[in-house]
Amino acid sequence: MLARLSIRDVVLIDQLDLEFSTGLTILTGETGAGKSILLDSLSLALGARGDGGLVRHGQTQGQVIAVFELPPGHAAHALLEGQDIEIGDQLILRRVQLADGRTRAYVNDQSVSVQALRALASSLVEIHGQHDERALTDPAIHRALVDSYGGLDGQAKATQEAYAALRDAERALESERARVAAAEAEADFARHAHEELTKLAVQPGEEEELAARRQAMMQGEKVAADIREARDHLSGDAAILPMLLSVSRRLQRRMPQAPSLIEPSVKALDEAIEALEGATRAVEDALDACAYDPQALERCEERLFTLRAMSRKHGAPIDNLPALAQKYADDLAALDAGRDEVVRLEAEVGRTREAYRAAARALSAARGQSARELEKAVTAELPPLKLERAQFRVELKSDEGLAAPSGWDRAEFLVRTNPGSRPGPLMKVASGGELSRFLLAIKVCLAERGTAPTLVFDEIDAGVGGAVADAMGHRLARLAARAQVLAVTHAPQVAARARSHYRISKSDVGEGERVVTSVARLQSDERREEIARMLAGAQITREARAAAKSLIEKAG
Image 1 (cartoon, rainbow, N blue to C red):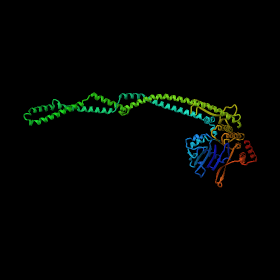
Image 2: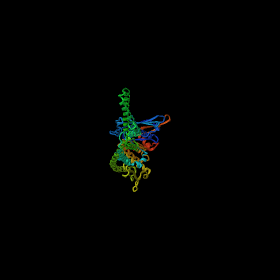
Image 3: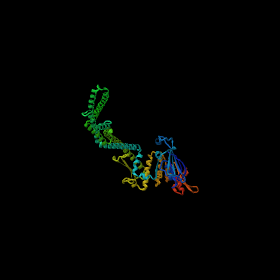
Image 4: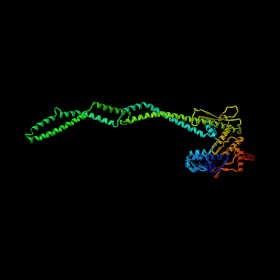
């Protein structure tokens, strides 16, 4: 429950420290006294949107501290788990509002984000304001209210998770189908390319080897004629070598006649002959080396041209063509695997769709039960509110074709004010006075099923009085038996049922230079006087005091 509220420098509040207890706490005061400032301050501590205009004039910042006492096992423990925030029996929410519009949020003096503060506060306090009417008459939120009343948050979350799993599976299937379709479109080319590249069977370094061989054969063709001519001069009919051999033999025959004269010449001729024979052998070897098969050159050139054409076709170096062939093989294998994956994902979509349908079907059935219970509860609240002949109905429509994270149900609150008439939407059927009473009955029923330990009602009795206000006070007191209830009210019938009563007022300070709001806890005589004021207005009469005493005694 909310144990303490401390406010510093917020609008008309200089310094305010309030302590609260269990049961029904009533806050009253004249219009403009600052009741809304008090609730705005509490809302700020609970994570509401900040506004630099909340800071009291002349100050750089304002601050609100809300201290809560937690019951055992409260959800706050789970929400704060893993955030390095120490939490015991008390939880201190602190919000600092800077004049420039920025805010800072703290939980037990540990800095947190406003989103984290807001999520935590939602488990601590529920605020029902006088402007809830627009929300309660909006069919867009009626389904959520049915869920809240039936305690269906767990089932709603399970349905949402099942829907998310279904959408994930559908997206995965969609993506895989698109990938397979794209691969199918390229499959014929990949198959053909793989076949021709595999058939081509490029060997490592083959291009360089073929180019070198082709170059050698082409160069050999050019020099072969000169080599043959050289061979003819060395060993042909007009060759010089036979002539030298003949000259050498003649001189050798003459050597006995003049050895000293002929021997050097013979020796020189022998050396020349030997050199020419070596040259002849070298020329013969060169001629053999440059000999080539024109068909071999043609085959070499065709292979080289084929490799280079395939390189251009696939936009890859020749040495990379084997890897490209493997890539096409991998693509074809991936296509086969993709087809298998599509089959698997289709089964997964079927499974998740059935899981979603089961969750949505169970949620729909639970909503039907919750709707009937809410109908009965609200209808039971109508007679004391002088709507004996009226009826409240929750129209629940289901369409399995409208799958959504929240299921496939639509809910709308309908009312009938007179027997025999057709139920219709709240805003269209109920008059102004009837509408406020219908909404009050709905608020009370929803609050009774609320999970927060503290309930705040901000002037939800606006526009009602007499027996209706008395019935409302009775219901707030009934709620206060199971939760802490804080209510801002103008109805004396409601105020008379308070366990704790605070009066909010404003006064001049500093010789009228400024106005401040203050809050005082009223004792029994002060309570009676405040309720008498609420009954009589500015001039409190003896009759008003007696009526106030009677109201308090009746409520007690």
